[in-house]
Length: 407
Image (cartoon, rainbow, N blue to C red; front, side):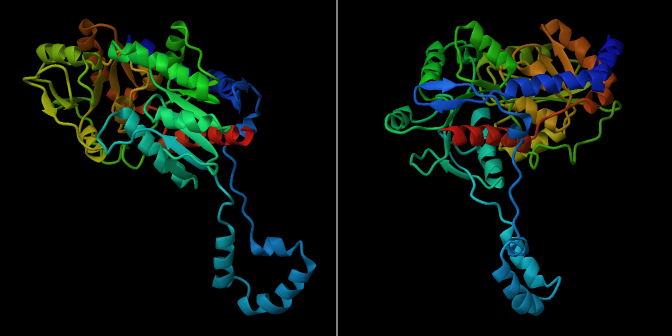
């Protein structure tokens, strides 16, 4: 019942319940990989080492304190001319406060101009946020000035990377999707390829959900030094600002989205909803590609992220029926825009939604769960939590730095 769900949600946010979660998180992340040719060892790092290091700030006045000659020159010459609080002194100190030497990272991925799927969107967003952290980000480059490489699944020039790796010791983080064949229903060979590459190149492996990690282990795959990092969204695009107020005295606005028209992305379920929805109470929009033809659902072609975010903020509830989806970017985007989710209880969906929505296991459960979301909309909306792209980029950066230092 809803009362039990609400009580469970409230209990889950008490300090006594939250603290063990963070303990588990640090235990999972605390083991970071070191690449040693074809061997890898598993060192331990403290929580302090895992946190992103603040850039060192050094002012000219601080440096002068440790040099007597420069101190005399400063006191007798420059300081009287500049004067305390001078705008010139402030400008010099601002220049001196620029971060010191930063990381150079090469992202290996076949980049496409958006809109083009969740993985491509994530890599573009990660590039932007790493750059904001003063990381020099390159695309598909190989040279000795690069500190660390981030490989995205199998979507890169494998032969070129393999040739360079034979004669160089590289610090490599390998981001793996999947299992691919569970998502698509085919392409088992691509999962096999991903883990051959993982064993050959990886110092560390980023998995997008605990569900993904568990399924891979069940299939016999053993990722190198796995770390689970959920995907994130760009908070400058996907946010709640400007979202329409929720009201029960108008039609409730439902929305779904998908880049792929694979039936496993939920098309048959959306068609079932179309045939059973109370159209006097609801309206329904689908953005992207679907395996089914809709007659009453309003369908919109794929749009750029900015337009998608605007569309999401014009709706109330997000529905996703994708199967075996390890970490749905579409779902995260909707949650970030303030939409409680009605989700198929599978894949990484429960990890992402947590208390910010309700699951269904078959189509017959959808009407009841939808009614519960509408009746208690404000409660579910208040329980939505989403990691921003800044949070995710900081975690990636910590991992890349530690791998680079140990290469």
